[in-house]
Length: 125
Image 1: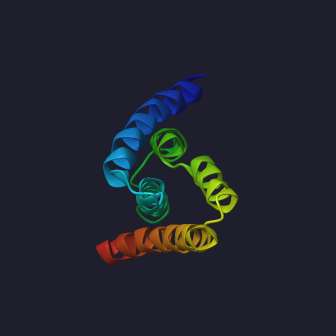
Image 2: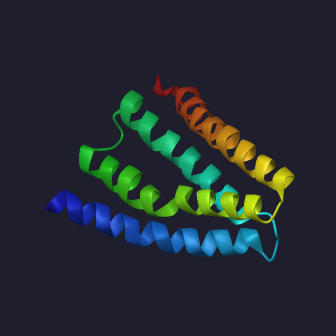
């Protein structure tokens, strides 16, 4: 039950952070930059958290669960990404659809790698 509470509290704050940051990044654009930005940032932080846990033992199991599953689970927005991508297809915006899907997949994987590199370069592994 304690883990559920940690996940729930993390998800609560992650969702609020997502709402604020994605709205700020989106700022009236037709391309879903807010969602892309949140997914990139969330993936980078997840890379940091997981590799800091693995290589440096920085986080306890409970803290890793709070951060990775709770906070970042509420923060990242893959379901929103999927919906927005589908809507671009429905609207005949094939180029924007392709750009959004490609950029999201490539940048979020890159962000996890950058999180790992940051940890290793800080002497973590």
